Length: 217
Image (spheres, rainbow, N blue to C red):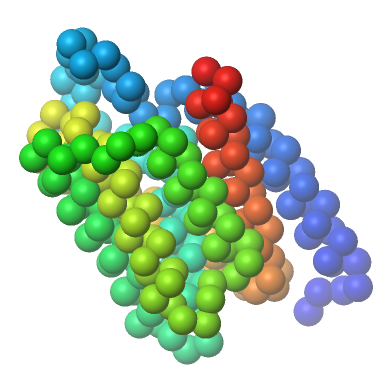
């Protein structure tokens, strides 16, 4: 059981996490998705040598993808609370399925507009969902997670070298989502369920940092 000073400690730790993540996000913001926003007549070859291993590791090196997948896992765990384990599993499965669909459509030439802006805003949206807790109707959270995953998958599909890289990307993303769910479990077990809101604030700030990098860059 937490003592009386625990809430204040949690707020202090959350503030420190916000500041640290903001500082750490800035150098990587411009590298979140190499290949976007190239002139139409310039070939995009950043992933030309990519293979399955590169696909697995990319979710750990692209800041927007990493934060979004972690937040999705944490949100899936949040949905599984109160005896709704199935809702959490469905949410995680929906995220990965939408990522795959977006990737395939991207490979087929269907490209979403304003990809970089959409990716950054998707991180903000996931953070806001965690910050204000998920709605009573989990379908809202599922819809948001599907939209975020589709946008990320589509961006990679447009850039990606092929299906082998895509399979690795899916595997790596699944691992990050699982890590996010584990982080949600640790947060609620070692502190209190409300502490997930601090994680949401951290994610939202990371998304705002990415938005700021796009505006200033």
